[in-house]
Length: 326
Image 1 (spheres, rainbow, N blue to C red):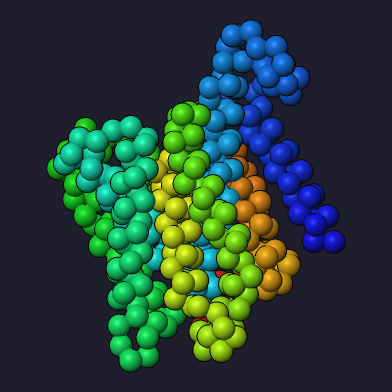
Image 2 (tube, helix red, strand yellow):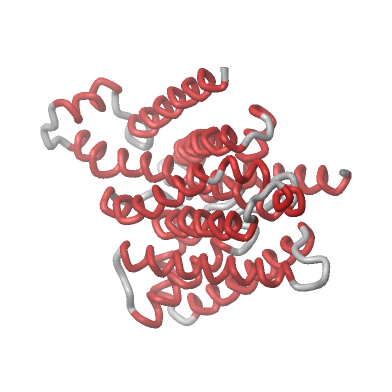
């Protein structure tokens, strides 16, 4: 049954992607969308579809899938129900390094930003795990949460400080900083797709080991698992997934918190199913949020990061209160 439900979700994802291509400030009939692939004629509609709408939908689906899987991996590794790239400082570290490289080194281009984002995500994530592991009791959910909040605030402050020193830079990247998939093209997605793909494969290959790790480090070690190797591999997957996502779409928050909890409610605690379901549902969520963001203040558009925040903040509070009661 889980395979059937996953197939249904994949069909739903295809449906929302088609809707994302067809609907917006300019609505395009479905037959024209199909015609743009079969008989491209260079008209305005076909040009909008091929150069704007299709890349936007594919970027939203890719980023949503990556952030959801990264959140699921982080939650089991840290035993923290609110862990995600946005709450544990990974996104903010990647963002700061991109801004720093553009301001200080004058870097530009998607490939350069991707490498910088991966370095920033790795450094920030490493600092959070180090700070959260200090002490005799090792890493605990409370300590890792506090460390993540501290690093997020630290890098966010540095980012804002750099932007205030250069008003022109502020105007250029403000929309990107709140998370947006608008104005991207296929070349930008192609630059980060290899890293996203490798990160996703690593996460899926770790799914069986994550099931054991979820029982606790002592139990996993007793069953012969090399927990340090599993956590290191999981960290690499998170860095590739989150870093690639930030490089192409900015720091979109809450997808990595919302989706894993919904998936665990639907399919249970088996990470062999949690990860693929998270990828598909994460893609559906972000594509749908991006589609909805076009209608809030039409003819202007709201960045998709604002939409995910509107959805995610109440969910975040619910999960935090639920964890406190338990």
